[in-house]
Length: 139
Image (cartoon, rainbow, N blue to C red):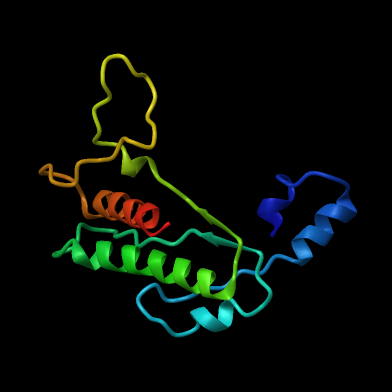
């Protein structure tokens, strides 16, 4: 909560009131348990921040990609069923880090994606790219 305080606008009272309405829930990306209950609390907005970040490259990229994709879709589905009207998903430069821009462009846009078929792409970069694509496909 303290980390958010300086980013809020308004009086100190308004900031304190806004933070009093914030609730944070930790759920397992790989398990259905708890998602429905977490969404029953009159939720207005879902902010999905989670993604596995391996310390070392895993033996199988599925160890990272599967929980990331399934967890994001699990969060979206639970929010949808509960009638949540706004979802915020954090993206990552990893979703475009291995994308070569055409000469005529200097900025990435929604058509740019890391090519996960290239060799040497880490499991984390693949997971961020594939998860974000799955989110957009779900929408």
